[in-house]
Image (cartoon, rainbow over all chains, first blue to last red; front, side, top):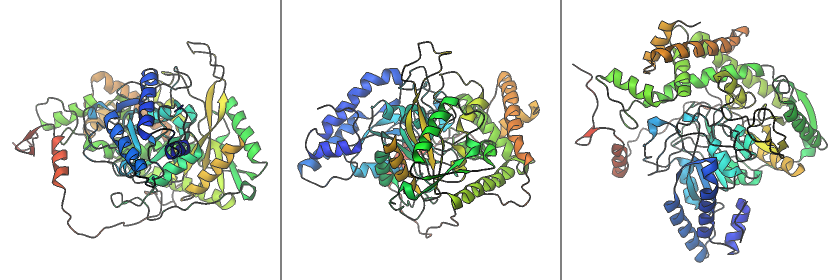
Length: 482
Length: 96
């Protein structure tokens, strides 16, 4: 029985019809990891022993003829900023290189309860700061479609694990695009829920008003099933919302879909634009397509970088070598803090800590942070107004396909990768990236001849707050059109 | 261009030790980034309220009841202490 390219439905059917056992399925995935991950480096930690005992339990449930939960036996990988009790949790950083999690994140607990099989922890940009997974203290992850290219970031490991069929699904976190953009680069589905729909308890915090956990999957249905399993009001996360979002039928023919003109200008790769427009045209055979304007779009990135850095500077203050994590020798407390943090945080982390500290410091708070908060209101208003006219918004997920490892050495040019995704986090909206095919890779600097099939492109679908199911179900309809 | 002294000051606030080279590097990079985010000054935000929370929820509270902590959990938290003595987390002195 070939255990390749399985979806959640395939796993469910396979286990039910006894085509394979949960143990065989788990073993098969660890075999795949062994074969493929040396080249891709998606995983930081593997949890094989625990996985096999989880699989054993699921096989017992099957033996007993029990009704299986929807995600029973399904192999899952977690970005290494989600706590899995008893396992290392590094956040891609030296400062947590040997830190062992003392409890489970809520999402981990929910999936444990479903009988999912935990394969391991995946690579990420350090403290989720990056758009390429090159900022990991443990080396980059490669894009499974072209090993000279980045998988995107910061959840590059999780995206690559699913794209390379090393896991059936994976979880990532998205603060400015860190699930959607790598999904787009790797040809997977990546979903970021409405802010508050999924608990952040046990997720190592980056920017608390922006972070959300979301699934990577091979198709939209799988992303939906994972979302269903992890979506919950959680007493440990006071920002989680007190409503279970409801399934919603969609009919493209009854929908009006907005295409924001600001997202189709300078900086968007020609080939990506062509591909996206073709899909929008196809959708337009059923739904009404309307050009809309989100006038403050160009300010989304500077707003994002100010707010995110400020929140990051507060959230990373806890890494002081006192209660956990790496430490350095010092003569006094101040030196102890400065050395421990200075020597164990990577460059990008230190850059953003400084930016955040600066914009929150006395004399600069009003000019930067407060002003950014106000422009954030304007950006939210843009979307609110748009959703008065349209049901959903379609945009490219990323201005380009996956770029080469080492290509973006200038921090600012890396920040521009988030240009289409960050506004969605600022407004707290749900957004999904759906793969819509490939574009040929640029022939210029690749060391090997450009792959004939090229690099994946993602289409982003954005909905209004709490319209997660409308977004996902529409994504499913569009997926079927391609 | 942001002053070198300012960079030193921020580094101290952020509790980050920087070498002389790093100081210069960050001085340049921070200046570039600050120039970039300065475009927000183009906007008139005099009548706009700041957003601190992306979704509309306020004052989420729980009842003020003490709950016992699982001693196993405490054990695991203690295990992570970089330096300990008699079960206490050992730190550098803060008083002379």
